[in-house]
Amino acid sequence: MIDYLIAMYPWLKAGHIVSVISWMAGIFYLPRLFVHHSEKVKVPSDTDRLFCMMESKLLKVIMTPAMLATWGFGLSLAVIPGVLNWSEVWPWVKLISIVAMTVFHVWLAKRQRDFENGENHLTGKTYRIMNEVPTVLLLAIVIMVVVRPF
Image: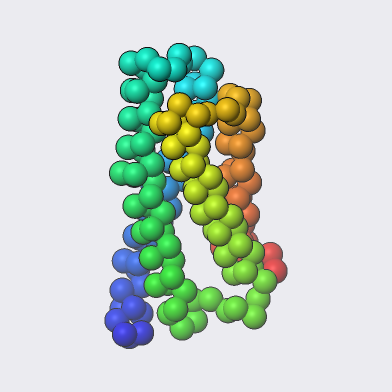
């Protein structure tokens, strides 16, 4: 199995990069939808239902499959001998950041259900602030992989 993964390394890496880009696109966009939904849309209304549909499809059709693919490709890469040295600090910081990104994804899914149920109580300002979380995590992840500072 390991020999197969070694042979597939470039394809696994390509799949990982594409799935990360897809996940991040959604994880940046969904909170922006929440900002406009919370600030500009009357509940209930046709526009409210439209926003709920867009948010739900973004989450379920793009973001969640991309997150699962990111984890799948990433774990496949991680088990290839020589790809990671777990005695170094950087892979652990990256892993913690990825887990935090996943927790943020779950938080977004809960907020999407709140909107769907007409129970959103957060402000546009809150969603604007929370939209910075994935930026910080993305910076940590990219720096750990590319620079490997420790």
